[in-house]
Length: 432
Image (cartoon, rainbow, N blue to C red):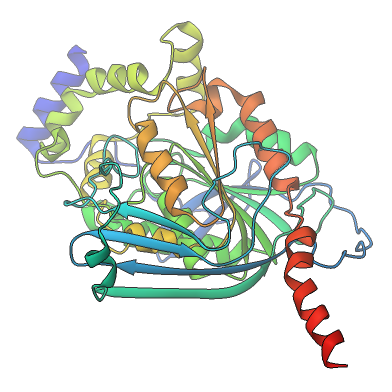
């Protein structure tokens, strides 16, 4: 503690930045990691395991198996009402038993938009949860919407096995973490034969840390993840994000809709646009934050883990769960500006999404993930009772099982498609 205060005072006197990760000279593969130069002087450490994939003969697909008609109309009214009309197919899940009930044909989801944009909270995606939706009156229904978005496409959602050579799993961590938080997941899925990719964000882990705040804005980090995706992405890619990392997964799902097959959001927060808080401890100078680093570390341990024993402290230390310089931490929190990532942006996603929430999470309230499940087209929400914000480290077996079940899940649309085609067949027979 005394050392931190002394270093902080020297920082204020000399004006230098403390503990900023220096640039990495080597961009070669070493120690099981790839060092990728996404931009000149901007090098990211990436854990890449190719897995033991073997060629598998494609199985003949049954009619209607996994083929989903994603059709919905999203209307935004001037009074702050968001109305989502789902007109596509019914999605059933016999595996997860946590289906979002708003995917039936003709169903309507009505959500009242929050008056203010969501703000970054801790490592989360945002904290702007809305009030319970109110049923709009008949007059409101007749009003012309301020904005209307129509989605009409067909997607094929298939099972993704480790033996499939066209499948890659991407793991993206949040603020203050590193790829090491995914240790249990990377090992588990690599043994199953999956190809896995996990990068360190700029300034985190062993990635280079630029000395300018602009290097840590949402858009700068999103471009980094875009470069990593282009380098390692295959035909079918599964994106798994934690906390702030969920926002980058959502961004990639929009940028590469044909390549992103499924999406996993772990304690990511609500579907609100990101905006840094005006009154936050992270607005203090970096040297002051450095003095407060022991307090910040204890606060993260208390809020991020369900228990604060020796096991959790060891997990946090081994996983680099909160090991980042005060300069990078401040720049990351103040750079969470993403106005495009609002409710409509998330409602436009047509990929299946698994939402995992740790019940004891003090960074992200469960209401936010519930609201996310309401807005998404195909969403499954699973709450882990014994987990908190770092649930993938606290309950690795449970999280791994959930992820694996989700990867193997594929919708069986044969029943719904049969009911749709029967009237057409009858009409054709009458015409004959």
